[in-house]
Image (cartoon, rainbow, N blue to C red; front, side):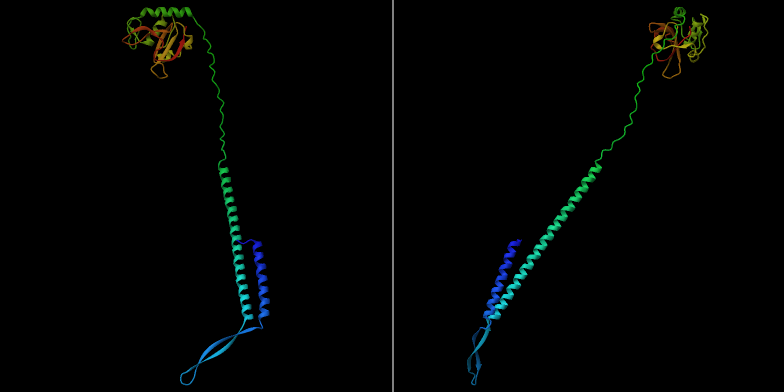
Length: 264
């Protein structure tokens, strides 16, 4: 690329040279030179004569034509240079426009990323965790403690007697509910015959408040009571166990404890 200053100096130099050439051509125009040339002319007897001919050449015209050709070359050079400059400017503009487009696309991408990177805050419903405070269990009425102890001492008389399904005899054999029914009958307390019905008699007693003479009910894993015993104190019970063991004393932690009732 040629700078503007260089281009201006070249134009001034060319204009000056053109002016000088035109002045020189105008001064030289009247003058012409004669150029001699020889020609062979055939004569009789096939002899050739050489004849000199003179040609006039106008140097002024030659100078003008030369100056015009120089101008044309200079004009073509300047046109090509201008075209190059135009093309370069166009290229610069295209590059600038491409850069702007690239910036726009990058800005769009960054904005898109920013929008996608928005933190989605999930509203977590905070449930109020209410701690279940164990309400203190009220101790049930003690009832007739002396009567309970009497029932226990009476039931112990039949330890070792046999177990018999459906029996109610304290000596010949009884099942668990037959045993409790017969023991309490001796003290004038009537109990139902089956375990399930006995579990609905009297008052509910928490396990921590058992006392001698209370009825304790168990099951084999379900919710319906299937076995009954008499609590004797110290974490022990007396009951008609099985045909193998008969009537005896064991720990009260057998099978699944369902409930406890106080009938005295």
